Image 1 (cartoon, rainbow, N blue to C red):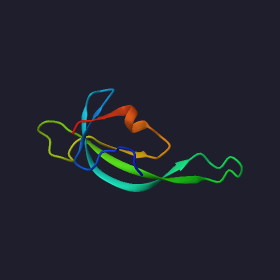
Image 2 (tube, rainbow, N blue to C red; image 1 turned 180 degrees about the vertical axis):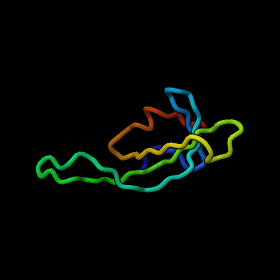
Image 3 (cartoon, helix red, strand yellow; image 1 turned 45 degrees about the vertical axis):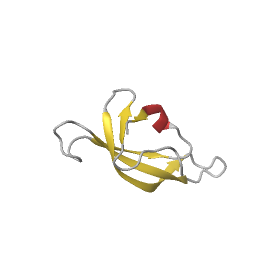
Image 4 (tube, one colour; image 1 turned 120 degrees about the vertical axis):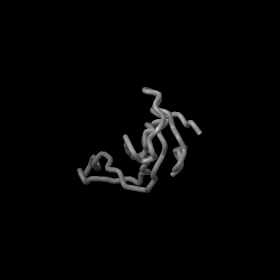
Length: 86
């Protein structure tokens, strides 16, 4: 799946707050989507998970605030919320 997502070690900047985050982990996962409209059966699609660590001067990597997001082919949330730093 190609979405222009950052790789482990790369940094991104949050567009809303201007904070810098480093990608610490990536993995393939499954994401729930809307149930099938005809049968009501639950559905899942492949997704890419990224774990971000907030870069703060004086803090060791992995210490402090962390957050993770799942990205699927059906969303554009990365492009809406982040800019690549390096």
